[in-house]
Image (cartoon, rainbow, N blue to C red):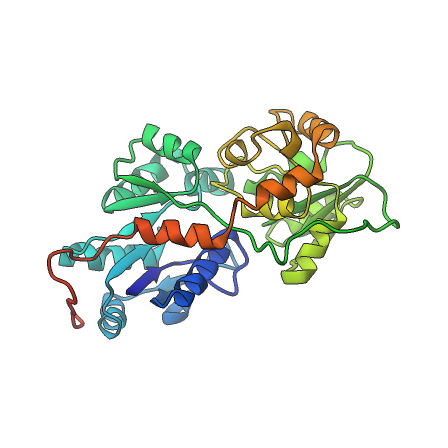
Length: 345
């Protein structure tokens, strides 16, 4: 099939959305499908005041129409709600095409934390956006329940995530020249990720932060005892997981948290809040602990976590299974007229 995926998040960004779409596109191509990613690379861009590393694309309608005309899709998936997602959604709606969407990011909570925008305003826009889809893909049962409670009415389908089990695996030994336990965070270093909750805890051991973002400089100055390593990818990232003793996930606003299953694949129990994402992944004491008090969650996870059990649990999450779910969830742009092709507006 010709599969068109529209996203505002793409390389060189480092986040769960990009990783998910990149791995899914790779697996789809391995299965013989033709995939066209419509991304910021296709358009002029402007700086984003809230996310400097994520520029805002300018997807003019004639440009979007021309791109799609050169790649007439059998299925369209709109992965994000930004300018590109809006433009491709509009294109499909004007032509009566069916399309799917996916809910990756709790932008209402982010905008509330970063800019003071009331959540109800943002959720009103997101309901409109996703309710126009033939199907909305969500990663977990808790996210589905949350969105339904907020009035999202499009049919929902599960699209879980995966982990590279060849790359992320337990270490045979841990480095000795560091105070233990090593408490690791991996992800964006910004206000909405709850890092302050983690870093201000008075606990023995070493706190390590892998990632970058607008709050890194401020947090590094406020918490000089923590080690801020910046971005890590591939084998370098896997080595940081494998060197740690516990993964701490202080975010209250993520929809899944791929980093949690990467950590578990390396034998790390997880300490987190009991919110969407963690409550679907950390389901028993051997895998870590959830608590409204993050310090208690860390204490309990260190005591109850079993590295071997974490690694076994992570094997449930493969990109092959994730891609099969994605394929099953897609809908044809027009089930009545196969092979339709449209020119530019």
